[in-house]
Length: 329
Image (cartoon, rainbow, N blue to C red; front, side):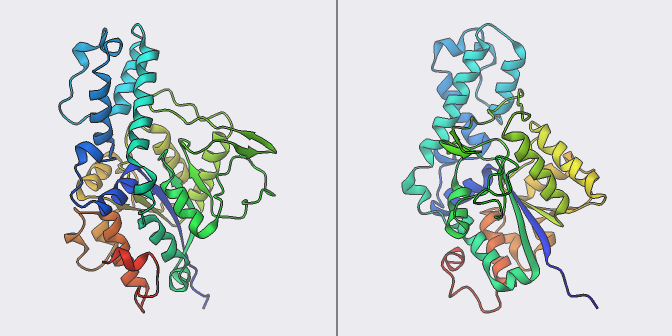
């Protein structure tokens, strides 16, 4: 009888993962002012853009702020319209998005975050390593919340900027930021120091240039290798067709379906299942986690999953942990 092989795990992080950190610190979070979900950022950014006459020129008739707003869709529509000044209008929106996110994720706030750190602490526990092997991290976020948590346990991340196998961090778990990062300044690649531009919001995304070609190819490799993809705080937006294409290709290359565990609200899960029912192993939080987790899901799915996963795996409890014990308090 062959020994049990640990399940190979990859995580995919969306804006909801960072939002969960903020909501965890501030339970009475006023989402209209501080929320980091796309709808929160979109509402704030569009409202600020409306105060500028240059933005409103030729746009006033499509500048309402009611309903469920999506800044990426709006940017895409303006880009595709090619109206006069469309480049300035979309550039303004993209700058406002960056300023908005960075203005909320101050050092005084992010220094108190601990959910991502608790996740890595869990995977470093002997009991967890016996059942699961963390083989990769994929993020759609521009912020560095995941990066800072990673450094607490593994030092400098392996962003896979190139194919060099002798890089100082080449043997580490890959941290693949598919759209880039606000903190990619003065990064050393092949002996040269450079600042790497992010892939901006909108339809005109180009991932073919370095280092994004390497990053996306590495993401495909780890998805093909994984048994389970855990999606935290991400709705798998139809706007990001490249991401869905990546998941589709990974299934084809692997030759069989891998599990996709959605660590999000019930509404987000239902939306994902409706949009992507061709992926056969999409599972919601209450299907792959035992216990009374359902009652906590609407509040903070990321935190709820960490609580029940640690209770399930760590038979001796979390008393001797640094971050996991804070999750359960």
